[in-house]
Length: 159
Image (tube, rainbow, N blue to C red):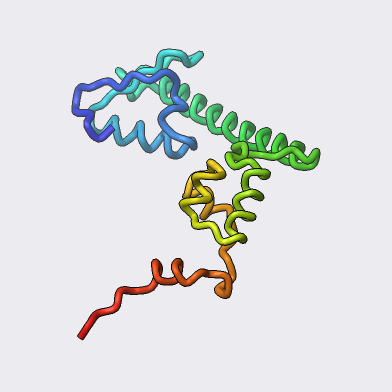
């Protein structure tokens, strides 16, 4: 929107694409009108064309469409929250499906507990290094091998 100059017309599908709330939408339209930039919608039931910004009917149409868009957004968020709550109550998992197979993760934990290195676990289990670090809890300090300790120890300087 900052690229629009005096005399430009911004064509949008519907007015609700301009802002999430009535206030955001009206503020943006006002700012654009002050800069001499017009707005035209294509699919709204009431056509919005800011060629005549002082027309009271055009102003009313903009306010009503912005209000309806905000109401629809509010109701949509409420419906989505209700659907999530119902799914959670039924024991359904919400969100992205798990990437790591629990059996593979258990196998990776077993490999780590038996002294395998992360590189070996990655090769044998097929789980990526990042996923291993994300899903496997850290080992207690007593189980860290000397080789692993040397890998993570700060370098020593010789005098």
